[in-house]
Image (cartoon, rainbow, N blue to C red; front, side):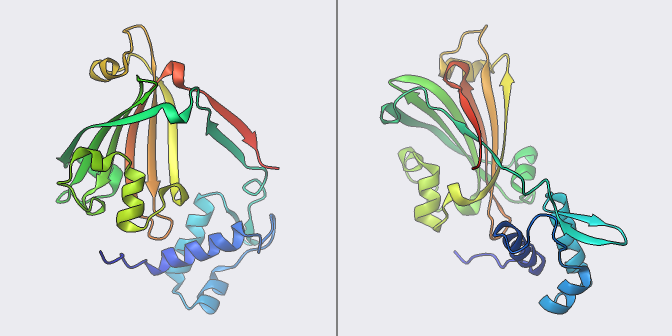
Length: 238
């Protein structure tokens, strides 16, 4: 599969982000101006403005009218990390692939950045710990990131493994956005899969992974997790 060509503005954004995140520009430093970008990187004024707007939107720079553009002070303060705490031994985990279906629901096409004429694959899996179901995944993958859709279901036991082996994409290294919220009541068909009673909640996790190189959405996942298996830790960097 031929890799999509990266738009020039995205190449510029990636390079400028790298300059900030690797410390070439310190917090509060004056950053490139629109004119700098046009002259030094051989891009159009429109591309330069688009790149600076995107960096500002992500909180990496602050643009002060009549003064200039500066690396954000708040963005480069201590980072806070959220991490799941497993309440069981990982060696006890098992994954069962329940189904894989082709879909083109408008809501999911939008979440995946796909055209209405395209489609995705929905892969439904259940994770168990010591024989007890605790996670229900519905992963939505763009059609061109499923290399062998007619393999048996266990072929998709690990979607991240499929990305690595089929497309040389390391999903944990890609950009992502995730939200977690309490879901009550849990949808009945999912509660049944997770052995959740009617008076028990679940944690709904919405997760989108995006390619750092192309900005393409690689997956959109809806995960339901049993409340008694949900625990996370918050820590800051050193």
